[in-house]
Length: 455
Image (cartoon, rainbow, N blue to C red):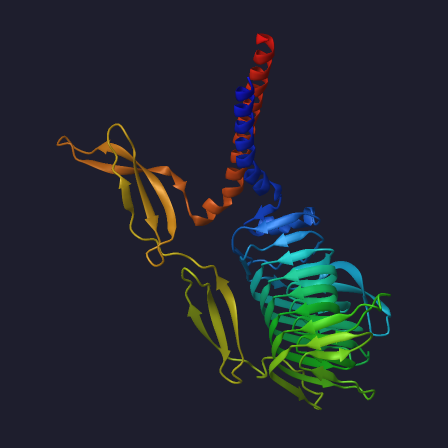
């Protein structure tokens, strides 16, 4: 009897051991996202956990910035052609260096990120072009951050804000706020135009952060900046102005182990002159800030005193562009490169997702009268599996020649589809193992009862 119990117990333990990995996989309850609709649906549950399972092209319609307070894992995938033309109408409070508060709107993929985590995400071909009379910060990834962590994110794009109020800023990753950014990069062109010379605005520009006390580590920045300001300028290659805007004056912030290449053109038309512009932090305000281990690869501070001409990337009065198309391949996206014949300014737009080149079908099993055949196709360039099809047997003529007729249903239609099916496969495996464990437990109970009755 003891031998039977021990055997049953061993079976249960083996089943549980096999069951545990499936539970672990299923415990990651992140909602998979593979298209624009999935991204937009985040607004219905901003506190949730999400996992990007495919590259996404957002070309076609401008993105409406959304608030977020959950966990977003990009899975190493890329969002292409993010276009923003208006800020989120929902406001949050931004604070200037004197801790004066302003109701502010924000334009970014996530307009507000509160107690959030954003990781392993790439943005390519970002275009943020906003004009507003409200206090506003514009950025590629996050407009307003509150206790938010950003890890291993890569940004490439352009941000342009035309503002006519007091608080205004542009940035590569975060416009305003506090939190952490590490192991990330930004290759951005930032433009801020102050369109009201009757108001002394507070202007902020940074390759990573406009203003606030986001702690920044191990980040690479390439910045081309333009600022036309009738107020107070705070420009930095990484941070425009670093300061603690809450009661947490004990916060010891840091910007360390980063690399920056920055060229910033600006003017500050203001007799009460400040004109902060520096390669790492434009202005350091309040408390102790560690600035260490940073490498300045290039920095140009191009201040001008000609206030009659708005500073823009396109310095030609009538830009005339040439275009060059780069086709996508297995590993890289395609895009269109634009170069002005007059001033040489160039930018990239209209990214196209990487795509494979289908090779010839390879027959794995010929069809017979009693069994269907099978064939598969791989990329002719990299050999990546692209799909397989069932081959049905059919008689063509009286001699008995046959040909393969492909079934309409693919076993795996494409790589993306196969990846999207993985969560369902894990769920099925979890269910099967759970049922198996239940059966074993019932057998164990039956053995135990039989043993007791035999005594």
